[in-house]
Length: 215
Length: 215
DNA sequence: ACAACCCTCCCCCGTTCGGGGGAAGGTCCG
DNA sequence: CGGACCTTCCCCCGAACGGGGGAGGGTTGT
Image: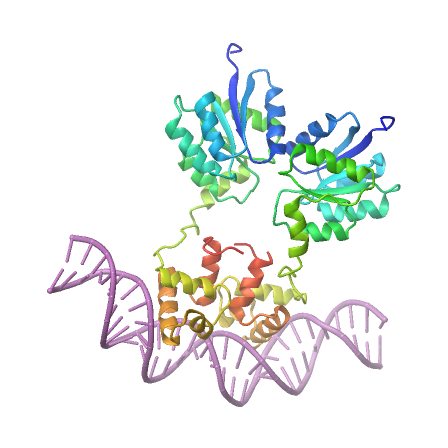
């Protein structure tokens, strides 16, 4: 199996991480780093040109995040490479999405270098999933309270929710958006229904927890 | 100036980042990486043993975060090394704390490798601060809404606020804490006054923003 | 053209908030 | 002991909230 090394494309917006990954992987005789991308869009383009065996991509990247990039790569590149998604965050919600997108593996950056190397090899040889324990739990625990927004909010409703999350009352929201107080009430009522919130405070909590608004 | 290289200690909980930093820094002829620590506690211990010129430490680490580690290193290690703090997050609140702790610099991980090298050199030669622009703004914008709690809340009030932040109404809070509804009203009123909040939702927002409750 | 939304505003009405008092018991500290 | 503070509970009352309902005009897509 030493005839053809595993050709790997690295995608991460942090030069530091790209360097780190490149060094670790290049040190292996059976692995060859054929390219580095600093954005999702670039990863897709490079994947088309280089047709690597494995794409190792970060979740968070500018111009197409890792998940979207993975999806597009798997849809458009032939022969399709194996995509391994890597992330910094233990509590990253994207584990599930990554797998749905067809990723072959999911890694934490805190993984030991050997684990990363091993994940690339496993992915290249068609083995299915490489889960650091902490992440595997997440895949299950996920979907639980996560469901960011069961029913999607309309534009106007999102505006209203944002103001609610700033602590404004209905009258203040009405003045801010140049609306009638009645209209705001309607929006708030719809928001509460869509989010299955008990009251406006609970709705705001959901907005925070889902990342819709940031502390 | 080629007589004595700059001796650097790297502290980061991610092996990947440590490798990346080590590679980048070791490539410079005037810089020598003398050690790596994977936790704050270890960084302190190694700093004492190795007396490096510069300690490059991540903010988030197990067993003593980067800030606390920096403080302890600067307090106990002689001769005191220059501490450069590095972080992943643009919106990290710890910039200010890091500088108060006596850090010589603050970097983002997304910085270009040359910037990191340069920061280490600047720190080693006693120059003061190295700020990526995005972080400098933070240092100023900081302190603004940060003030966690103007008046400290009593234990009971904190309990009530926590339940408020879960979206519970006064009656529900009363049942949960085995209190009269009137009592809860009193606590809520006091909380609103102490936090200078306009209403309960605003109080919850303040609780989130201050980190009193986490999304 | 029609359904399916979204946005806007209106009514009623019961519940909850929120601000203003007061008062009792407790601890803790000077 | 006498404040200062926390905790518990009580009153009143106006304002805000939240759940129903309906209605008209807009866009989008089938």
